[in-house]
Length: 50
Image (cartoon, rainbow, N blue to C red; front, side):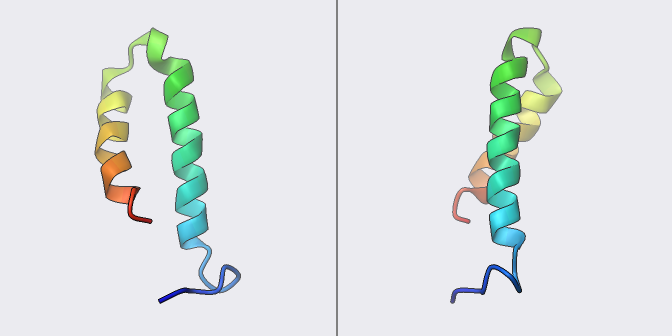
């Protein structure tokens, strides 16, 4: 079941948001943000099938 990107941009949005979050996570890793790290760890497997 494929949705047209113009009518259902959520999948694309989530993919870009996850990429941004992952990039930010890499940049913030040295600053030790455990709450954000845990949040990302929970998000990644949940959004992976998208």
